[in-house]
Amino acid sequence: MPTAELQAQEVRRHLEKILQAPGFARNERLFRLLRFIVNWHLEGRDHQLKESVIGAEVFGRRPDYDPKSDAIVRTEARRLRALLNEYYLGEGKSEELVIELPKGGYVPVIRRVGTPSRTDRPLSSWLRWRGTAVAGLVIVAVAAVGWTRFGPPTAPIPIAVLPLINVSQDAAEDYFADGLTGELISNLSIIEGLTVRSQTSSFVFKGKPRNVRDAGEQLHADYFLEGSVLRRGTHLRILTQLVRAKDDYPLWSGRFERDEADVFAIQDEISRGIVNSLRLKLGHGRRRYETSAEAYDLYLRARALEIEQGLHGVDQSVDPFEQVIAKDPSFAPAFAGLAAAYATRTRQGGQILGPPLDRAGELSKMRTAVARALELDPLLAEAHDALGMVQARDAQWEPAEKSFRRALEMDSNNSRARKHFASDLLIPLGRVAEAIEQLRLAAKADPLAADVQSEFAFALIAAGRFEEAAALCEKLPPNGPRKHAWLAMAMIGRGRIDASIQLLEPIFAAGLPYSASDANAGQLGYAYALSGRREEAEKVAAGLSSPPQQAVVFAGFGGRDRTLEALERSAPLGGVQIGRFLVFPEFAFLRGDPRLNALRKKVGLPE
Image (cartoon, rainbow, N blue to C red):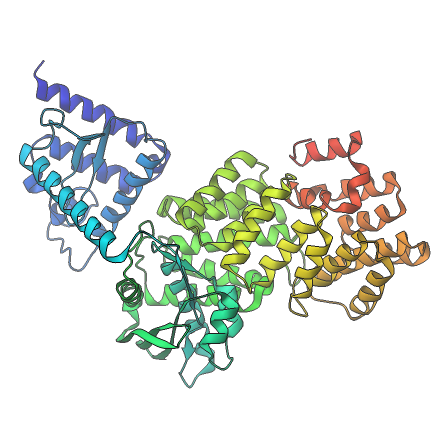
């Protein structure tokens, strides 16, 4: 059989193997596109692989299809490049052949892995190989010059994005500036050489007088991006500047007067301005999304709710995320945001405001949303983070860990993913030392985020490091999540039972929003029980709506039966929530009890 035919058969076998991979098998568009361009390439029809032809042959566009008015081919080609890259980094890393789709064209390049010889690269011409080799030498030479000029690579540059100021007369437009700030943080997070402070920390400075030096010290940031947004109808004016924190010196500024539909291009230009100013290079992995102005406006509303209102905002963000999806079913970040919102609500035991929701229904919606996010963009870090949350709630611990680690590989600055990894997997599984390390890194990236610091304090308590936990709790804002409950736990761990009662009695009497009041009550009842004030402890337990918090109170009496009975009634909350309670110091006396082992097995936790 002729050599060329053997080579073509080898490529086709390789192609069919790729097309059976989950990422391609679930995505009909990319499946068709890859098969089409490879087959036409093998048939010697490279000259016909043009945008107009692909639009008609692959995507069913009319023969007079105009690529300038419909970007489907360019959009899907970008997605195909990303998915091929992910395949060869993952399940296809041991393949002998590699299929690439170079930027700016639609003719695939098919090569063998490794440095090819003239005869080992039968599917590309010798001239193409020689050009590639020369280009490689040029890159090496440029890199050598760069090394000599700028020195060896240094630690990533810490940078923060201060909340963009809404200068419109309508304060209702604040959400747009806030959401756009969050998007810029996400875009900068994938740039090599930057470590970006997350939005929770940055938004501590919203509405406060501008003092870059003070903000730099608090956020441990060397540079800041700041600016303003004016929105009038569909017209945008965005002013930004990059400032060096130590001397308030502006390094770069940009003024953008555009239509609202160009907001994605503006974000790209801002990123490039920072890259050029700091002599960095753009990272890879995040798609440049395209959607309607109306859908993107709703997406920014959802993001702003989460940024500004914490758990309340997460609860309220579900509706705008769903509206985005209704208007644009191809916008992957909306699906990822929706999945994460559902996951947060299920961990809280239901809707944060109003009556409890159907937890099973929420979990089903969560799974659907995250699957769609990954189908649309396999390289979206937020989607892999949400997938980890979903898998953890299904007690699929090993896949969940892989998903969290994949999210962090894509975006190591993502403090939310580190927090979710710790809170939803490592702590429930009792891997507290690993959780502490993840939360330490999250706190470094997000030094002013109360939810990260609160989770860090809890992990320290679970490890018996009560002094450190108490010091961390003292730094939380007055109404920080679980501040008083965790501080009381740290006090009790150090034997200061009376002090914990004095701390919690006025807090419990005043009441707090969401389930924080139950946490305070549980710790107060536990402290009452430890101090012999049984009647008061029983009264607190009777008023609690949370079975796990009732178990906390009963643990103070030292009785296994009532404590285990309350924990068993908590089983519908699932392994993530039950596992988090079981690392409480209060429940140490139950370890080894066969009934506890049976409960762990029931909710999918290892015994």
